[in-house]
Structure formats: C-alpha cells, structure tokens
Length: 266
Image 1 (cartoon, rainbow, N blue to C red):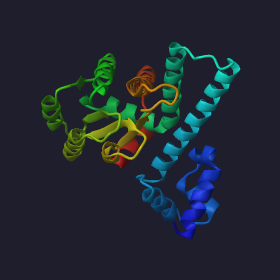
Image 2: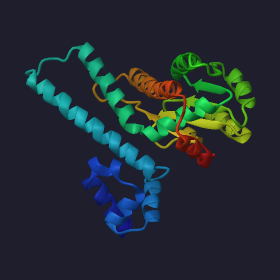
Image 3: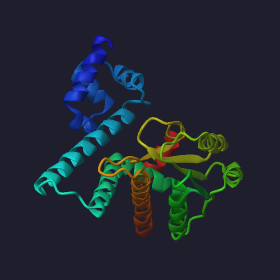
Image 4: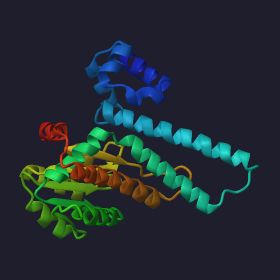
C-alpha cells in the first residue's frame, strides 16, 4: 500500500463502528487525502466503491456485536448446550438486523417508487430465491400493480425481452454472480427498463449493473444454515419495500425525490 492507503486503512480499522456514517468526502477530509483516493482504495481491495466497502464493514461490525452477545449468553447459561430452536432464532434475528442496517430509507423509497411508477414489473429469483420472488409478486399484485414472477429461464428471458422504458426488472439473488441474471439485467437496461437488485452486500456483477441496489445477508454466524439466513433476510427487505409502497398508496403519493433519484440513476 502507498502511504495514503495505509492512512486510510488505519483510520477505517480504528473507526470501523462509525464508518457507516461517513461519506467519501468526510473520510477523505478526516484522513487528509483526496476523495478519489478513498474511491480508488475501495476498488483496490475488491469493492465497486466506498459505499460497498462501508456496507461490508458495517455488516461485519453488526455480526461481531451479535456474536459477543451470543457468547455472553452462553457463558451466562453456564456452558449448557444451546437448543436448536434458540440457534435458529438467533440466526434469523441476525439476518433481520443485518438486512435492516444494510438498506437505508432512500434506497427502499427509490425501489418502491420504481415499482409504483412501472407499467410492468418482472421479478426474477435464482434458486431458492425464486420462492421469495414469487411471494413478493403476489403481495405487490395486491396493490393493483402489474407484476409477474417466472421460474423458468426461457420464460424469464422472453419476459425481460418485452420490458422497455417505464417498466421494471427486480432481480433477487443471494450472491449475484449468475451469468443468466447478468444477461437479464443487461437486456432490461438496454430496453430502457429500471433494474433493481437484491443481493449479498459483497461486490457482484448483478448489483453493479442495477440502477437501484438493495442488500441482504447470506451468512449467519450463530447457525450454519445459509438458505434460512438468506431467505429470511431477502423476505425482510421485500417487506420493507412492500410496506413503503403500501404507505405511499394510503397517503396517495410518493416522494418526488425518489422519482428524481431513479431518473439520475438511469
């Protein structure tokens, strides 16, 4: 690392629990480097930019704090074995907490506004995420929106081929690495549709191609049950988007800033 990169690394390690509240400009000013140095540093260690880096750091901090609490509880129980039901509860709690922390109101509002404004929305989920996409489509349909969710790859492709300006593609994927999902995202973007991604917070091509990025947790430290953790986290993010939409429906309006944010993203 260069001298400036070492300064950035030291500052981040010393202030990990506070990094989520920093912008790239603020951390640059605090360390005494340029904003571009912060972005380049983030990219050098494998992230798309500073936002992706600080989200990953924040999730790590949240998990560490949760682990401390779990270990403290085990010690208080005198070393007794923790029942499976309690382990599962803890894993789900971590998934809910992580998903809540990873998604700010601005991103949730932008996703809700995009679906609300869309003529047609197609939800796509890979693997076990398809059930999350299917349930999400059913719930959003209850708000009177034109939404579909297909599980077959060919039907997904043919559906995305019909999306254009004023439509929306919502991709749900644990890791966001699927070549098929990347193809869908590129085709939707080429047609002018707004692309929303819901993936793990790590750098991945599906999120990189999306106009609006939401994040879920795919790993749990208290229980080795990745499918349970990922599904719980993804459903919680969908709940947040759904109820943001439902509140907007009840109020009869959506924030103009959200629509403007989508236009800038496009």
